[in-house]
Length: 124
Figure 1: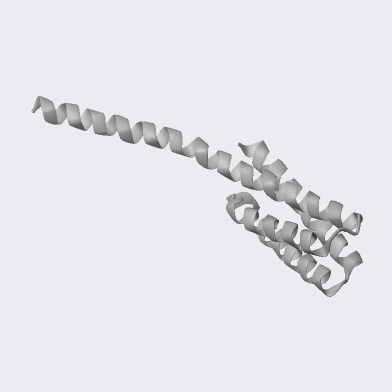
Figure 2: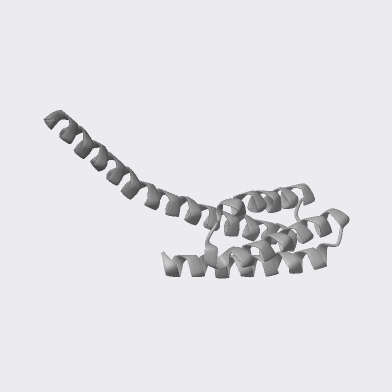
């Protein structure tokens, strides 16, 4: 009986500690995705303003679109969807050679993601 009690206590401790350590790692991953998304969009904006290589610019946008998938936070979910649509529209415009409208849309997406990051940081 003592062995069973010790085993149950050990199991409860293991579950408690794994739960306690799992949550901050998730928050760190979300924060890293958010900051990475903003950084990639800033890189794309800089390339667009310098009239940089279109392939690099599209890659930066695609990288941002991949990173933003991990930036999941319930309060900002609708904003994330809108900003992702703007990234898609911007990428398509760059591919079509419409640099001016693409840059404007890209800057709008950047503003949304920066606001989302502020909201996330304020609540965590």
